[in-house]
Amino acid sequence: MAAFYDYFNEQKYGDAVKNFLDLISSSGRWNQKSIETPIMLKEGFMIKRAQGRNRFGMKNFKKRWFRLTNHEFTYHKTKGEGALCRIPIENILAVERLEEESFKMKNMFQVIQPERALYIQANNCVEARDWIDILTKVSQCNRKRLSTYHPSAYLNGHWLCCKMSADTEPGCTPCTGGLPANIQLDVDGDREAERIYCLFSTYMNKLVNMQEACGSRSVYDGPEQEEYSCFLIDDPRETYKTLRVIISSVQTLEQQHTKYKRDMFRKTKIGSQDHPIGDKSFQCYIHQQSESSTYSI
View 1: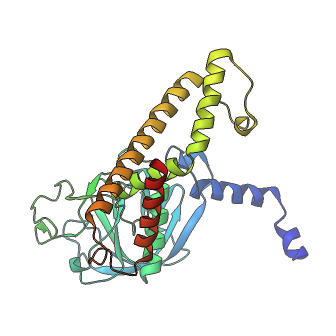
View 2: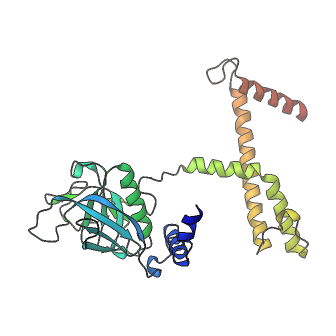
View 3: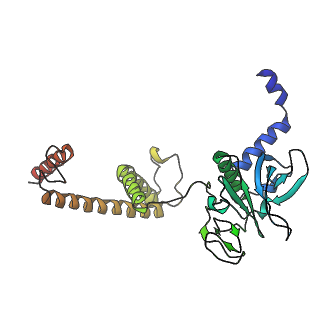
Protein backbone atom coordinates (compact mmCIF):
# COMPACT_ATOMS: atom_id res chain seq x y z
CA MET A 1 0.00 0.00 0.00
CA ALA A 2 3.04 2.31 0.02
CA ALA A 3 2.50 3.60 -3.52
CA PHE A 4 -1.21 4.09 -2.87
CA TYR A 5 -0.46 6.03 0.32
CA ASP A 6 2.11 8.27 -1.39
CA TYR A 7 -0.41 9.16 -4.10
CA PHE A 8 -2.95 10.46 -1.56
CA ASN A 9 -0.48 11.81 0.98
CA GLU A 10 -1.23 15.44 0.18
CA GLN A 11 -2.69 18.13 2.39
CA LYS A 12 -5.73 18.75 0.20
CA TYR A 13 -6.85 15.14 0.48
CA GLY A 14 -6.30 15.16 4.23
CA ASP A 15 -8.35 18.34 4.61
CA ALA A 16 -11.13 16.91 2.46
CA VAL A 17 -11.37 13.77 4.60
CA LYS A 18 -11.42 15.83 7.81
CA ASN A 19 -14.15 18.09 6.45
CA PHE A 20 -16.22 15.10 5.37
CA LEU A 21 -15.91 13.40 8.78
CA ASP A 22 -16.76 16.67 10.55
CA LEU A 23 -19.81 17.07 8.34
CA ILE A 24 -21.37 13.63 8.85
CA SER A 25 -20.62 13.48 12.59
CA SER A 26 -21.53 17.05 13.51
CA SER A 27 -24.27 18.10 15.92
CA GLY A 28 -27.33 20.10 14.91
CA ARG A 29 -25.67 23.38 15.91
CA TRP A 30 -23.00 23.08 13.24
CA ASN A 31 -23.29 25.19 10.10
CA GLN A 32 -23.02 22.90 7.07
CA LYS A 33 -22.01 25.79 4.81
CA SER A 34 -19.01 26.75 6.88
CA ILE A 35 -17.08 24.69 4.32
CA GLU A 36 -16.99 26.76 1.14
CA THR A 37 -15.97 23.96 -1.22
CA PRO A 38 -18.92 21.58 -1.83
CA ILE A 39 -18.31 18.05 -0.56
CA MET A 40 -20.05 15.24 -2.42
CA LEU A 41 -21.72 13.03 0.19
CA LYS A 42 -23.75 10.61 -1.88
CA GLU A 43 -24.88 10.08 -5.46
CA GLY A 44 -26.71 7.51 -7.54
CA PHE A 45 -29.68 6.75 -9.78
CA MET A 46 -33.20 6.85 -8.32
CA ILE A 47 -36.71 7.33 -9.64
CA LYS A 48 -38.48 10.59 -8.87
CA ARG A 49 -42.00 11.83 -9.39
CA ALA A 50 -42.42 15.15 -11.19
CA GLN A 51 -42.89 17.95 -8.66
CA GLY A 52 -45.60 19.72 -10.65
CA ARG A 53 -43.76 23.01 -10.99
CA ASN A 54 -45.66 23.54 -14.27
CA ARG A 55 -49.39 23.72 -13.69
CA PHE A 56 -50.31 21.61 -16.71
CA GLY A 57 -47.25 19.35 -16.71
CA MET A 58 -47.57 15.57 -16.34
CA LYS A 59 -46.61 14.22 -12.93
CA ASN A 60 -44.98 11.02 -14.12
CA PHE A 61 -42.00 9.04 -12.81
CA LYS A 62 -38.55 9.32 -14.33
CA LYS A 63 -35.13 7.90 -13.58
CA ARG A 64 -32.64 10.58 -12.59
CA TRP A 65 -29.10 10.90 -11.26
CA PHE A 66 -29.14 12.37 -7.74
CA ARG A 67 -26.23 14.14 -6.03
CA LEU A 68 -26.02 15.36 -2.44
CA THR A 69 -23.38 17.80 -1.21
CA ASN A 70 -23.13 19.82 1.97
CA HIS A 71 -24.66 22.74 0.02
CA GLU A 72 -27.48 21.30 -2.07
CA PHE A 73 -29.45 18.29 -3.23
CA THR A 74 -29.72 18.04 -7.02
CA TYR A 75 -30.90 15.65 -9.71
CA HIS A 76 -29.72 15.34 -13.31
CA LYS A 77 -30.95 13.61 -16.44
CA THR A 78 -27.85 11.43 -16.34
CA LYS A 79 -24.47 11.42 -14.64
CA GLY A 80 -22.22 14.28 -15.70
CA GLU A 81 -24.97 16.51 -17.12
CA GLY A 82 -26.21 19.80 -15.69
CA ALA A 83 -28.66 19.86 -12.84
CA LEU A 84 -32.36 19.84 -13.72
CA CYS A 85 -33.32 20.90 -10.21
CA ARG A 86 -31.38 22.28 -7.24
CA ILE A 87 -32.67 22.14 -3.67
CA PRO A 88 -30.56 24.12 -1.18
CA ILE A 89 -29.96 22.27 2.07
CA GLU A 90 -31.62 25.07 4.06
CA ASN A 91 -34.84 24.48 2.06
CA ILE A 92 -35.15 20.86 3.22
CA LEU A 93 -37.78 20.98 5.97
CA ALA A 94 -38.01 17.23 6.60
CA VAL A 95 -37.05 13.87 5.09
CA GLU A 96 -39.50 11.07 5.81
CA ARG A 97 -40.69 7.78 4.42
CA LEU A 98 -43.71 7.71 2.11
CA GLU A 99 -46.38 5.09 2.65
CA GLU A 100 -46.59 2.46 -0.06
CA GLU A 101 -50.31 3.05 -0.63
CA SER A 102 -49.59 6.50 -2.10
CA PHE A 103 -48.33 5.23 -5.46
CA LYS A 104 -48.32 1.44 -4.92
CA MET A 105 -44.52 1.58 -4.95
CA LYS A 106 -42.05 0.38 -2.33
CA ASN A 107 -38.92 2.05 -0.94
CA MET A 108 -40.23 5.58 -1.38
CA PHE A 109 -39.40 8.64 0.68
CA GLN A 110 -40.13 12.37 0.46
CA VAL A 111 -37.95 15.44 0.64
CA ILE A 112 -40.27 18.14 1.96
CA GLN A 113 -39.67 21.72 0.78
CA PRO A 114 -41.50 24.97 1.62
CA GLU A 115 -43.84 24.76 -1.38
CA ARG A 116 -43.93 21.07 -2.33
CA ALA A 117 -42.53 17.64 -1.61
CA LEU A 118 -40.21 15.67 -3.86
CA TYR A 119 -41.22 11.99 -3.97
CA ILE A 120 -38.36 9.59 -4.66
CA GLN A 121 -38.11 5.82 -5.00
CA ALA A 122 -34.79 4.18 -4.11
CA ASN A 123 -33.53 0.96 -5.67
CA ASN A 124 -34.01 -1.05 -2.48
CA CYS A 125 -34.79 -0.64 1.22
CA VAL A 126 -31.11 -0.30 2.18
CA GLU A 127 -30.55 2.53 -0.29
CA ALA A 128 -33.72 4.24 0.89
CA ARG A 129 -32.59 4.11 4.51
CA ASP A 130 -29.12 5.43 3.61
CA TRP A 131 -30.51 8.36 1.65
CA ILE A 132 -33.00 9.25 4.40
CA ASP A 133 -30.34 9.09 7.09
CA ILE A 134 -27.77 11.26 5.33
CA LEU A 135 -30.35 13.80 4.11
CA THR A 136 -31.67 14.07 7.67
CA LYS A 137 -28.19 14.59 9.08
CA VAL A 138 -27.19 17.39 6.71
CA SER A 139 -30.52 19.23 7.17
CA GLN A 140 -31.12 18.73 10.90
CA CYS A 141 -29.69 22.17 11.77
CA ASN A 142 -32.24 23.99 9.60
CA ARG A 143 -34.21 26.45 11.69
CA LYS A 144 -37.49 25.89 9.83
CA ARG A 145 -37.57 22.10 10.13
CA LEU A 146 -41.10 20.75 10.43
CA SER A 147 -42.44 19.04 13.52
CA THR A 148 -45.23 17.21 11.65
CA TYR A 149 -45.65 15.83 8.13
CA HIS A 150 -48.04 13.87 5.92
CA PRO A 151 -46.93 10.21 5.60
CA SER A 152 -48.97 9.81 2.40
CA ALA A 153 -49.10 11.82 -0.81
CA TYR A 154 -51.50 14.56 -1.88
CA LEU A 155 -53.58 13.05 -4.68
CA ASN A 156 -56.95 13.82 -6.28
CA GLY A 157 -57.47 16.94 -4.20
CA HIS A 158 -56.78 15.54 -0.72
CA TRP A 159 -54.14 13.98 1.50
CA LEU A 160 -54.45 10.21 1.52
CA CYS A 161 -53.44 9.99 5.19
CA CYS A 162 -55.76 12.50 6.90
CA LYS A 163 -58.21 13.18 4.01
CA MET A 164 -57.75 16.96 4.35
CA SER A 165 -58.41 18.85 1.11
CA ALA A 166 -56.00 21.80 1.45
CA ASP A 167 -52.54 21.05 0.09
CA THR A 168 -51.11 23.52 2.63
CA GLU A 169 -52.66 21.68 5.58
CA PRO A 170 -50.12 21.07 8.42
CA GLY A 171 -48.88 17.53 8.82
CA CYS A 172 -50.86 14.93 10.72
CA THR A 173 -47.96 12.79 11.98
CA PRO A 174 -44.96 13.83 14.14
CA CYS A 175 -41.62 13.91 12.35
CA THR A 176 -38.86 11.60 13.46
CA GLY A 177 -37.02 14.63 14.86
CA GLY A 178 -33.52 14.07 13.54
CA LEU A 179 -33.38 10.39 14.45
CA PRO A 180 -32.71 7.82 11.74
CA ALA A 181 -35.93 7.64 9.83
CA ASN A 182 -36.34 3.89 10.32
CA ILE A 183 -36.30 4.24 14.13
CA GLN A 184 -39.36 5.20 16.14
CA LEU A 185 -38.42 6.14 19.70
CA ASP A 186 -40.67 4.51 22.30
CA VAL A 187 -39.45 5.09 25.85
CA ASP A 188 -40.77 2.83 28.59
CA GLY A 189 -40.77 5.20 31.57
CA ASP A 190 -41.24 2.48 34.19
CA ARG A 191 -38.42 0.38 32.81
CA GLU A 192 -36.02 3.32 32.58
CA ALA A 193 -36.88 4.40 36.13
CA GLU A 194 -36.17 0.87 37.34
CA ARG A 195 -32.84 0.90 35.52
CA ILE A 196 -31.85 4.19 37.16
CA TYR A 197 -32.82 2.81 40.56
CA CYS A 198 -30.74 -0.34 39.98
CA LEU A 199 -27.70 1.74 39.06
CA PHE A 200 -28.03 3.89 42.18
CA SER A 201 -28.59 0.84 44.36
CA THR A 202 -25.59 -1.01 42.90
CA TYR A 203 -23.21 1.91 43.40
CA MET A 204 -24.64 3.12 46.71
CA ASN A 205 -21.23 2.85 48.44
CA LYS A 206 -19.67 5.17 45.88
CA LEU A 207 -22.50 7.67 46.28
CA VAL A 208 -22.02 7.67 50.06
CA ASN A 209 -18.25 8.14 49.71
CA MET A 210 -18.77 10.96 47.24
CA GLN A 211 -21.23 12.61 49.61
CA GLU A 212 -18.68 12.41 52.43
CA ALA A 213 -16.01 13.89 50.16
CA CYS A 214 -18.32 16.79 49.22
CA GLY A 215 -19.19 17.30 52.88
CA SER A 216 -15.56 17.54 53.94
CA ARG A 217 -14.75 19.98 51.14
CA SER A 218 -17.77 22.18 51.80
CA VAL A 219 -16.98 22.40 55.52
CA TYR A 220 -13.24 22.93 55.65
CA ASP A 221 -12.04 22.46 52.07
CA GLY A 222 -10.19 19.28 52.96
CA PRO A 223 -8.07 17.25 50.55
CA GLU A 224 -9.76 15.41 47.71
CA GLN A 225 -10.03 11.66 47.98
CA GLU A 226 -7.96 9.86 45.40
CA GLU A 227 -11.02 8.13 43.96
CA TYR A 228 -12.61 11.48 43.01
CA SER A 229 -9.49 13.42 42.07
CA CYS A 230 -10.03 12.71 38.37
CA PHE A 231 -12.87 15.25 38.09
CA LEU A 232 -13.69 18.65 39.52
CA ILE A 233 -16.66 19.29 41.80
CA ASP A 234 -17.53 22.93 41.12
CA ASP A 235 -20.07 23.30 43.93
CA PRO A 236 -19.51 20.75 46.73
CA ARG A 237 -22.39 22.13 48.80
CA GLU A 238 -25.03 21.70 46.07
CA THR A 239 -23.56 18.34 45.04
CA TYR A 240 -23.81 17.21 48.66
CA LYS A 241 -27.50 18.20 48.79
CA THR A 242 -28.23 16.40 45.52
CA LEU A 243 -26.49 13.22 46.68
CA ARG A 244 -28.34 13.35 49.97
CA VAL A 245 -31.70 13.46 48.17
CA ILE A 246 -30.69 10.59 45.84
CA ILE A 247 -29.47 8.39 48.69
CA SER A 248 -32.56 9.11 50.77
CA SER A 249 -34.86 8.28 47.82
CA VAL A 250 -33.07 5.01 47.07
CA GLN A 251 -33.16 3.96 50.73
CA THR A 252 -36.89 4.73 50.89
CA LEU A 253 -37.51 2.60 47.80
CA GLU A 254 -35.46 -0.24 49.27
CA GLN A 255 -37.57 -0.15 52.43
CA GLN A 256 -40.76 -0.25 50.37
CA HIS A 257 -39.42 -3.17 48.31
CA THR A 258 -38.47 -5.08 51.45
CA LYS A 259 -41.93 -4.51 52.96
CA TYR A 260 -43.60 -5.63 49.74
CA LYS A 261 -41.52 -8.82 49.58
CA ARG A 262 -42.26 -9.55 53.23
CA ASP A 263 -46.01 -9.14 52.66
CA MET A 264 -45.88 -11.34 49.57
CA PHE A 265 -43.94 -13.98 51.52
CA ARG A 266 -46.63 -14.08 54.19
CA LYS A 267 -49.49 -14.32 51.70
CA THR A 268 -47.94 -16.79 49.26
CA LYS A 269 -48.48 -20.50 49.86
CA ILE A 270 -45.89 -23.09 48.91
CA GLY A 271 -47.24 -25.21 46.08
CA SER A 272 -49.45 -22.48 44.66
CA GLN A 273 -49.41 -21.41 41.02
CA ASP A 274 -47.21 -18.43 41.83
CA HIS A 275 -44.58 -20.51 43.66
CA PRO A 276 -44.87 -24.20 42.80
CA ILE A 277 -42.98 -26.87 44.69
CA GLY A 278 -39.41 -27.07 43.43
CA ASP A 279 -39.12 -23.37 42.61
CA LYS A 280 -35.50 -22.72 43.56
CA SER A 281 -35.86 -18.96 43.58
CA PHE A 282 -38.67 -19.15 46.10
CA GLN A 283 -36.75 -21.65 48.24
CA CYS A 284 -33.76 -19.28 48.33
CA TYR A 285 -36.07 -16.46 49.35
CA ILE A 286 -37.54 -18.58 52.18
CA HIS A 287 -34.02 -19.35 53.39
CA GLN A 288 -33.14 -15.63 53.37
CA GLN A 289 -36.32 -14.75 55.26
CA SER A 290 -35.69 -17.43 57.89
CA GLU A 291 -32.15 -16.18 58.41
CA SER A 292 -33.31 -12.56 58.75
CA SER A 293 -36.04 -13.62 61.19
CA THR A 294 -33.53 -15.58 63.32
CA TYR A 295 -31.12 -12.65 63.26
CA SER A 296 -33.83 -10.20 64.32
CA ILE A 297 -34.86 -12.49 67.20
